[in-house]
Image 1 (cartoon, protein in one colour):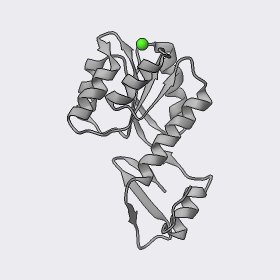
Image 2 (cartoon, helix red, strand yellow; image 1 turned 30 degrees about the vertical axis):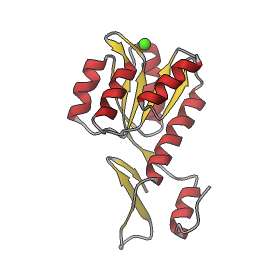
Image 3 (tube, rainbow, N blue to C red; image 1 turned 90 degrees about the vertical axis):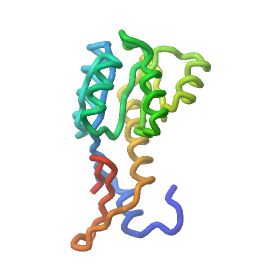
Length: 166
Ligand code: CA
């Protein structure tokens, strides 16, 4: 639901099916088949995807680039993906994290949320649900950022990191 006070233009853009959310996504998953599938679907949606399979490599990649979203597996060869998320939050880095987890217990979900993940999805998951959760996070992210309006254009452009809606 759109709140009152938003401009007609913004509301129009938000309601448009043509909204195009393109993000730079870091995918941390050590199951190659699953990673391949997820990467393919994200790319098909127009996102840039950098894929890796360990916490150590994820940290190195994260420091060298700017990501709009981190899709993070928990069971990684060098530890629990949640540790990577905790580390980011300790550094006051609030980059959105979507956790992939094979563990379906209430405790695991609570642990994930307390570690600072924004959302989680339990494996095995449907591609459609995954895409919807990604879109949801990116939409929330775009709503929380200020609109940068180009006076030469009738359209509003919002940006956060490399995520741009136009
Ligand atoms: Ca895994």
